[in-house]
Amino acid sequence: MAKITIDKKEIEFKPGQTILQVAKENGIKIPHFCWHPGLSISGNCRICLVEIEKFPKLSIACATQAMDGMVVHTKSEKVVKSQNAVMEFLLINHPLDCPICDEAGECKLQDYAYKFSTGQSRFDEEKNHKDKRVPLGPNVMFDQERCISCSRCIRFCDEIAKDPQLTFIQRGEKVTITTFPGKELDNPYSMNVIEICPVGALTSRHFRFRARVWDMSFTDSICIGCSRGCNSTIGVRNNEILRIEPRQNLDVNEYWLCDWGRLNTYKYVNDESLRFKTPIIKTEETEKQIGVAWDEAISKAASELNGAKDILFIASPYSTLEDNYTLKKFAKEIFKSDEVVYIPNIDESFADDLLKKADKTPNSNGLKLLGINPISESHIENLKAGKYKIVYIIGDDISRIPESEKFIKKIDSLIYHLSTKTKNSEYAYVIFPKSTYAEINGTFVNFQNRVQRLKPAVVTLEQERLIGEYSISRLDKFGAQNDTWSHGTRFNARPTWKILASIAKSLGHDFKFENSEEVFMELANTIPQMKGWDYEIVGAKGKNINS
Ligand code: FES
Image 1 (cartoon, protein in one colour):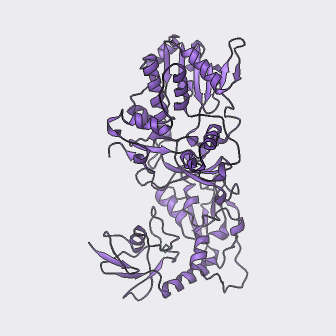
Image 2 (tube, protein in one colour; image 1 turned 90 degrees about the vertical axis):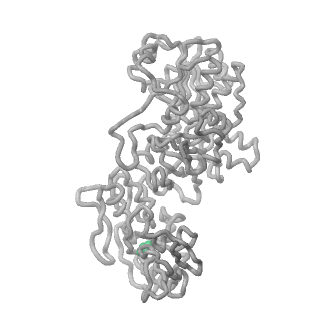
């Protein structure tokens, strides 16, 4: 195999790799602004210049292919001098406004200014001023003065979104980016330019000025917008989700996330007007819904279910494997019932060729693995005929069943696990406030049959109690990585598997689940491809059941 020497380290490389790629793979850091692993090479920022023996001039590491026997220096005097010069050049007209810049704390230019610049500028003249707040589209704001013209955003629109909405105009120090006349940056992936912008030029119109990043915690998660299950990161401050960003997973979403997923999957988690404050039951006397303590709601559901027949259990493609498995076990072990179904959500108009899938749920493949099928016509006919006295539904809205208005009033007892109010929740006999995907440990199975992990990014009242009961070292178990959860609202919600286990206990069946991983390990043993799996095996980037 061909070998290259970088900073005295001899390294084998694959044909076609650039010096920057070989260095990156081997833990040698070469600064780069315009190069991005998901985009073509433009080679315009020059911060990655390195010295190659026998080459007359410095070369850019991002565009120079590694060659057998090549000897590269990334920290020689010449290289350091060129890095100083590039930084001085890039900062000539930069406003140096880190104290009021949203990117501060996660800005490549800021980091490199510390590492690769001398901290001095010889430029005494007035800086070239440009526009500071230019809305490029509904989601992205542009600060022209901070732009270093790396062209990542332009290349992203051209190459990934396949919608060339951005371009350079002007030349020299006047150069800037813009949309074409009368057009906006509004493609379905437009917000990816925010993360790939290496400076604070492109910022989110939804997140701007809401928090400094060092005051936030970031938790690995999975987008629930469709069955791709894009890997994401949830950013939280004061126990409130402020943003969702893509997390790199080359097997699932590469580096990207669609705007729909990032904007529509978290606001309800924070919304006090939508979330339930307590469990709810319908009183016998007044037939009105009232808020009650958990124990009372659990006894109410248990007494209604005790000895009951004609129950339809509705699982949820929005809920985890753990929740759906527990529902299936609940139906089978206590009621000897296989009548567990789910409501699909297929929307062909939502799908595209990049990430978005027509199945708008994150876990329908998980339900298939558990042997839970979509609701059939005969179930709907039976509902209309009033055959089911009780409908037990977790994490979904019964009004998604076609013609639900024809049978909703025929159900004697509707028992719901819900995170937020729905159209028909007023008919419920009991409502258990269910933790959202951002508040639990659990797993989804995406369209590729890849099992992927959820971790709690925000803390519920119950988790806070558990954190108090256990030691501080257990914090990580609940995903709360620092004290950003110590202020703010906590919702009174519990995971579905836990609520079901509590009701089962009231009915004399001890499921013996202490935490979600125990549920996962039990269910994994019922699926041949997942025998012996635990959360560690699933790992941070998920595991395909066929691998
Ligand atoms: Fe190589 Fe910009 S990263 S020229």
